[in-house]
Image (cartoon, rainbow, N blue to C red; front, side, top):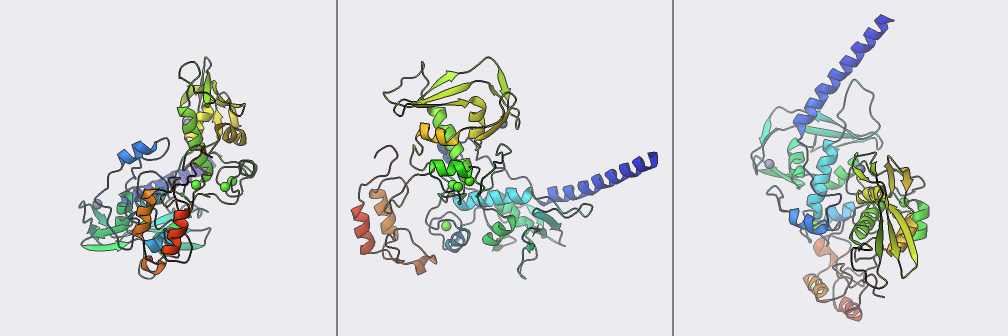
Length: 425
Ligand SMILES: [Ca+2]
Ligand SMILES: [Ca+2]
Ligand SMILES: [Ca+2]
Ligand SMILES: [Ca+2]
Ligand SMILES: [Zn+2]
Ligand SMILES: [Zn+2]
């Protein structure tokens, strides 16, 4: 018996040694990405927080200057003429590169002592030679990770030209760039291939508060039933194409709306205006995920115009702020807010850009109005065609014939000064 236990301890020790060795390699390979944007950061803060990094190398054929080439955007389902689809204040290419770096750095490192994982993992190849970053002078090994995806049965880089993803490219991605320059040579990561092997279908936003839900066909954290009742698409995890999963997006938007509602007895409330009543109780509730303490009570959110109301526990507010309608806390255990009722009470979409917002074809900058700023966008592409940009569509082509001309202008003029601003029917 004792022999057996000793053998087991030795096995555990060896495994630990194995893990340690590979972990050390992984740490050497890439430093942690510093992502400061994300949960709970409102747009203005995000805008203020973004300052371009000198590693963000400019590229050609980039109509919206978001550091993704037109052809790349088409290949990965981004919009080649909209540089900030997630409305984060950060150019899409910069944001995506940082998310990719984070995803790569969090991949499990290949461990010969364990069975092959059934999720993407990396094996780091060390080459004979070093290279130096042309921007900051950092010296890194010329090797880098090969990424394996057992589910797809493939590994990457796949092409004969690239044998691995250089450590240097990961360094640049951490700084927001898919192009990287070392020892005077500039190269670029194959963005579509990288996203495929990493299986990134939406902006990577690791947050343990995103509790899984059942009956969610498209995996956007809204159940099929909720989507049907509220009028969302249960077969599309990102129906507004902003690369944020719709359930996560909607939960954050609802949290923001509730946060800014006037409070009964404290704030002035206009006639028919949405407001909330404080029903906080003596006692705290702890979040199962992050341990944060919130009040164990709730807000009663009232819509006097519709004669509807809903209780929103403070713990639910905490989770919604993180992008989840499901919550788990020390007092209310596991629960989920009634999404259909909440959306109805709050009259979502409330603001232009909220999930479910309708846009007119002539509203080229997505501000819910057809105005002079849209003319500005139109004239930028005036008389150009798709071949000029290398895309199958072009901003301002309202007639879908791959040209921007008088036909489009006529359609545009017909929508002049029309609006789809929520709450202004
Ligand atoms: Ca672009
Ligand atoms: Ca869903
Ligand atoms: Ca959906
Ligand atoms: Ca979305
Ligand atoms: Zn550098
Ligand atoms: Zn929490």
